Image 1 (cartoon, rainbow, N blue to C red):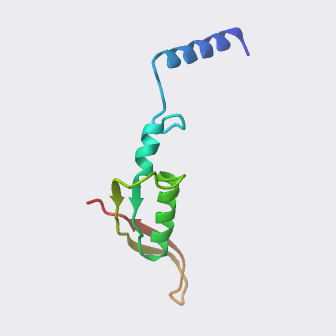
Image 2: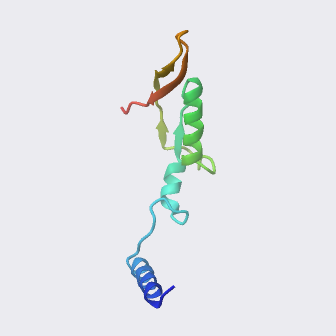
Image 3: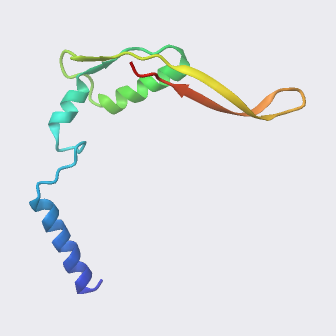
Length: 104
């Protein structure tokens, strides 16, 4: 690596550290992770809803609820599918599944 590249990387790191840059969802920022952990995710019906519920719990509350929840996330899923490949027997061999969680 040339000395010019090393110098430019070093200067870039110094500038970023001097401006107070902190990633919003980084592991060292406890404020947002505490707020996210206080969201209670209500159960969502059907299998796709269960998968979404589990993924939301893992993303928002990786260590579990921190005390009494302040926020409650309640949603419904609407699903539909479009057949892409259909055999002569009208059996779909390939389809696109669309799921939508409407915002209130």
